[in-house]
Image 1 (cartoon, helix red, strand yellow):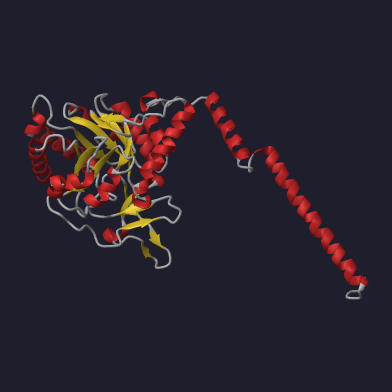
Image 2 (cartoon, one colour; image 1 turned 30 degrees about the vertical axis):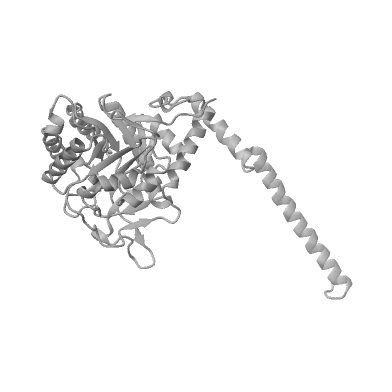
Length: 393
């Protein structure tokens, strides 16, 4: 069988792999992004930019659980400013010769609607001046860690105003948008909120190419047990939760958004992806591609090669030639499926030498044998001691 093909398209943009980076970790400079471009990542998404460069919140503004189960960040969008990420020098330094034609994408997260519109105008000018350099723009509607600023994706009236204003720009108001537009969404938890958000996005399907879901879960708190204080300095310790702990919320958001959004709007899955299996599950729920954030943060760009290799192995084992073969193929729960899953888990435990009834019986037998040997040794020791007059029986 030929090697499984991981390529995909998002908003009509060809990606060499369905796995690429989320905006944020290790994306602030061309030196960092260059490493992403050189990896198996399908494209490069730059740091969410503001109009001017900014340092972000005070340190420490990040925290990682020792076992890797969760991470927190309250970075406050440190970035080099939109001009840096649009600079031909930055893009050239990031992408290099780019023989595979990987996409370079920008992300914006203005402090105000006016800021976002201004940055979109700058992006428009760059695209017109240098066609083909910038593949798309991702508008961040989901950043929960800027002091005093609301999360747009939770304020549906504001979300409607933002999308309406963006759609009115010349780059999007023509017959065909000048470049693809994506949005980054916060996590939703109630069905009416999914419906409300999707309804707004569907109104702008003419200009909207994809929705990335999810960003961090806001207002999490980790405690420094020894010092009896928050583990993160900024905002009283309240920060965005990410990593494996959010994967199940992310899967639900991808599944529901895929059900509710117009077919013309792709869904990009993000949240807790750190393995080929995680990526496989996201795509099974309907994601066109998968973004990796926290794992890239903690492991570095080598994570893209590893995750892609793991995903290919899963696809090869199951007979999938490309991601379209299983995208959105999540089955309904069934007794037959549950039985197959139980059988697979038992077989896996047996293969590892630690599962099944036989293994449990063997463990019990080994324990009894150990006790018997210990008793015999003790008896022999006492008899020898009596013989040599150490003790008297």
